[in-house]
Every structure is written in C-alpha cells, then in structure tokens.
Image (cartoon, rainbow, N blue to C red; front, side, top):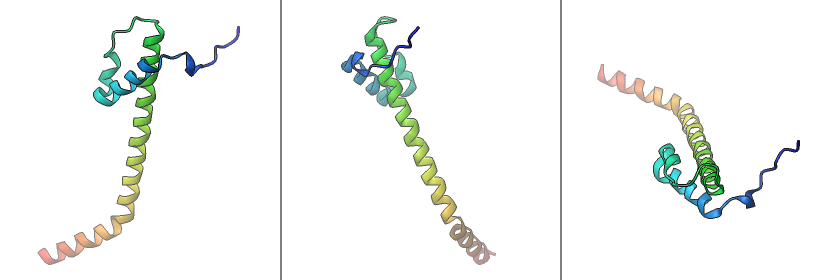
Length: 91
C-alpha cells in the first residue's frame, strides 16, 4: 500500500486562510469556529491552516522566551549589583 503524499494544492485556499485567521482571532478555541462537514476538503483545509498558524505562534513564543532568558541572564550581574547598592543605601 502506497502512502498518500501531502499535496498542498488539494486544499481549499480560502478555507486554509480562514483557519489561520480563526487561530489569530480566537486562539485554540478557534478550532471549532467553522461549519464544514466532517471529512470534507474544506474542513481539512481549515484545520491545516489553523494548525499551521498554531505552530508558527508556538515558534514565535519560544523565540521570545529564549530572547528574554538571554537578556535576563546577561543583565543579571548588573541587576544584582544594583540591588546590593540599593540595599546598602537603605540600611
């Protein structure tokens, strides 16, 4: 039995775009904001667009978290010195 290969051209581009927009507007709750019949190409297209946007959002969030962590690690020595000076002046 041959595996079916993913064919992006088989998707309905309008429904794909609607899926992406549903995630942007409603987050994960947007996955059910459609009226497409189960098993239809429209529903598959919607869910593929939704999933793609969800994945892209996770990557962006991960990149932002990494950038924040690197910033906080880089600045931790300066922050610690500032806190020690502040504590010394208040005592």
